[in-house]
Structures are given as C-alpha cells and as structure tokens.
Amino acid sequence: MATLKPMTVPEFRAAKSRAQKLAVLTCYDYTSARLLDAAGVDALLVGDSLGMVIQGQKTPLPVTMREMLYHTACVVRGTSRALIVADMPFLSYQVSAAQSVRNAGRFLKIGAAAVKLEGGERMLPAIEACIRADIPVMGHIGLTPQSVHKMGGFKVQRDAEQILADAIAIERAGVFSIVLEGVPADVAAQVTALVNVPIIGIGAGPSCDGQVLVLHDMLGMYPDFRPKFVKQYANLSATISDAVATYCREVKDGQFPTAAETFQ
Ligand code: KIV
Image 1 (cartoon, rainbow, N blue to C red):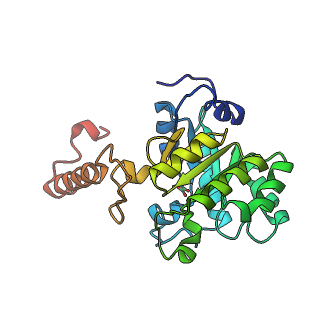
Image 2: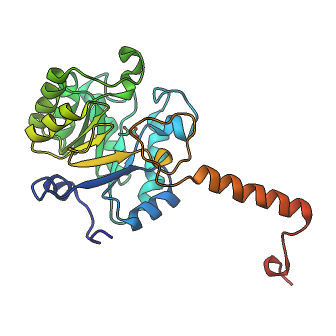
Image 3: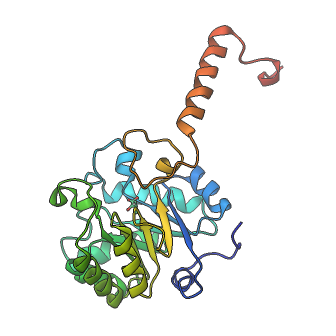
C-alpha cells in the first residue's frame, strides 16, 4: 500500500528523481475512484477513452467537454489521495491557445489538479498558454488516439526522431509528466533517459518511469478490443456475467429474496 500523503503535481514530477515508479489508471466514476484511490494508485486519469469503454464509441473523437466535466466531477468526489488528471477532449484545445486555457481551467475549477492534452511540437501554443495560466499539463505523445484518422488507425508509432523532438519540446514548455503511448520499447527507453519529467508508458515497454492502463482493459471488462500491451489483472466480465446469471435464475426460481433480505 502506498503512502497516504496526497499526491501533488510537484510530488508526481519528483518521483522520477527518486526512481520511484508511478502507477496510473483511468477512472470515470465515483465508485471506481474510491476503490482505486484506496488501493494506492498515484494518479487517476479521467481519460477520453471513456468514449469507447463507457459510451461504446469507436474512437474518442465524439467525447465533449460537458461529458468530461461530468465524469471528472464524479471522480473528484471519490478521491482523497490520488492526483486527478483530466483529459482534454478533441477540439477543446486545438482551435486556439485562449480556447485551451478556458477549457483547461474548467477542469481545475471542479477539482482536477492537472489536464492532459495530446500532441508534441505542434501543440506548443496550447501547452504553453495553459502553463502560463498555472494549469499543470501532462503531455501525450507517440500514438495519440485523437489523431486516429491521420494515423490510419491506432498504430504503433515508429518515427523515433519526431517522438524525441516532441518529448524535448514539451518538456521545455513545462509539462510535469508525459504519457508515451504505442511506441517501440527502445524508443521509449531513449525518451525516458533523455527527459527529466516522468514518462508514463502505455504500450511503451518497461523502461518508462510509470505505466498507465485503461481500467476496463486491465479488469477484463472491455471485450471489444484487446491490445497486446494490456495485462488483464482480473476477469470481471466473467465474474459479472456469472453473478447476473445467478441472480436471474434465483429470481425466476423464487430463491431470491429470502427472509434474510425481507422486512418483516
Ligand atoms: O484517454 C485515455 O484513457 C488515455 C490513456 C489511455 C493514456 O489517454
């Protein structure tokens, strides 16, 4: 079990200098936030992956600011220790630097400690504007799901030169951490060695300073897509199906409710 001290942005950033690995998970609701927080997760990312695992969309592109704010508020209510990072959805920061600050600030107003936004060099204006407004930013480079159509699918990104340039550029801009997604392990190792802020990998091998997974993937609750990099720590699909099938059978057979579940 991790220390009970609340995780702050400076603490999260400083973990790298202490060679302390960081465990991050996505989270979208109050009940999960309570469980994950108590289990010692360092940061809860309210990811726009909720478009897929909560809403059943094919990509995160349809997710709106309103939806992200709603889920972030639910996670805030269930969290007492972990750092809460809210993902900026597609078109909430790409239009202008002013738009990015205005939208990022809305997440801090409801209790998030930081925002995450996708893109390297080309997103510097948005990143710099948020950081100038004292809004901590987590970068996200490599495979950036909001660029799914430009990439031609959710594909491993192999342009090591561009990935390194992106990491250096956003570190200089002041991000406190970087999510590095879907890149070969040797590229991730180079990025991790080169920059001074924690690199949080997803599909980026073991050298990163920390790891992030989508909660529904690691709990075995999202059968639509099973990427190679996911380790399933539980099979909740089977557990839930069994429980619900038993409930249905007991209701139909008259075995539930019994006296124990009945007010006399
Ligand atoms: O949206 C998300 O959940 C993410 C993580 C997978 C890094 O961006």
